[in-house]
Length: 232
Image (cartoon, rainbow, N blue to C red):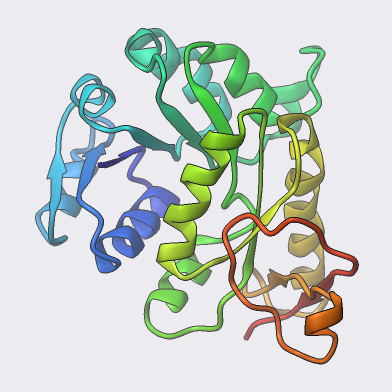
């Protein structure tokens, strides 16, 4: 069972994707009843309180801004998340990291949710890209980081089933690099006039795939080259 905390643009797009791929969902939103509105049009989706979602779901997607996750979500449900996997899809604002001693939003989230196994992923993908992907748009690579291998494997299985190409980017401390990749893609989109219609794709040049296209595998072992592609 998947839970999505935060039903804004990104959370709603992910809920639509997971529902389209057949995942049962629990959704929790804010005061505007976004979860109820979203659940009413998605199969196998139920709107509930954050506390109920935290209790029911084994994997939770945290789709809220970093400061909201730390100051509002964690104090309310963090104690309910012992042994559960928390997928952080956020990108930090400059103020989020100022003076914290951490280099990434994911590390801040892990500090705020010490009972959970935090995995970073999907932060390099926009809501617009996800919705295009649902309707047959091109696939792209999702780097994931985390300190617990089984938690990363769990997230990788979900993302692989959803149709993404998944790349293991190492421990959670490496999240700074994939959060930085988001900013790079944003700047490329601005320079080329594409906005957020810019994605990331990894080219693996192993001996058996030297002349082949990348193929989606959960958590591939190693890579030797990478490539960014612009998706219109």
